[in-house]
Length: 253
Image 1 (tube, rainbow, N blue to C red):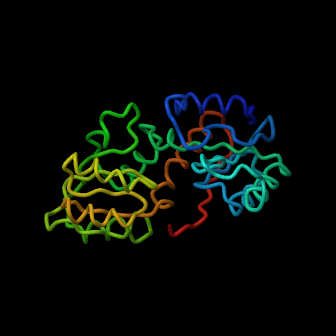
Image 2: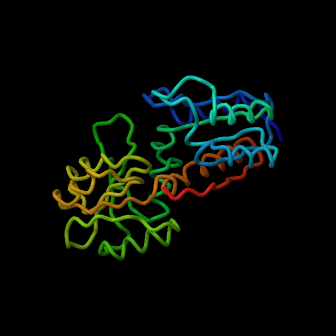
Image 3: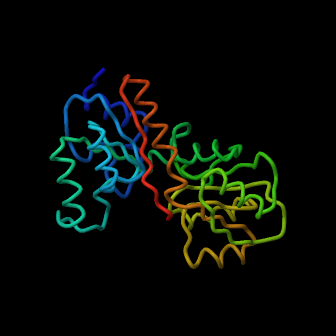
């Protein structure tokens, strides 16, 4: 069955409440392609390898978490940007991207999806005063020491996280925010959780973890953000009866 790209975009924009977010890139349709679509491909980032996979699969829509046109980037269409856009336009593929709205969605979002995968029980928002809860806090399904938690995350994500030890206590409570949210560690400290998990790490994160007595876990930007976009593709597949395939372009970062 086919649907119009206008219908898909409208449904996604409403589902993810994109107007409530001040984001670093436009959410929704970023590159227009076919007006009627039957096949969707999802992935984390709209890199050239994912575009090539979409072309090979004859996808009409490429739906990603990390799209294009980020604030502060050069506006010229040259080099990598030119190559990516040329392929999308030549094959009439629609590019849809949802960044913070996908992180924050309460059932399909990256943070809830990661919680489900790691069996964290959500108890609240990492930043309770924010209008949209992007990061979350909760409790582990089973308390464990940092070394065991590291092994557990490695098993679940198929990627060995980098950990910074902040204390010797068993971990019962945890905060998390997928992607490049290492600086939310200050909010995790304020919440009084035993550990904080994000995707990336900065030099300053190490000192904060050690001096504030909180474990820090850098589990990978890509690795922590693979799951929301899959859920979003599955939601579209069911709602519009379209073909959907998730493609994971490996990335160690």
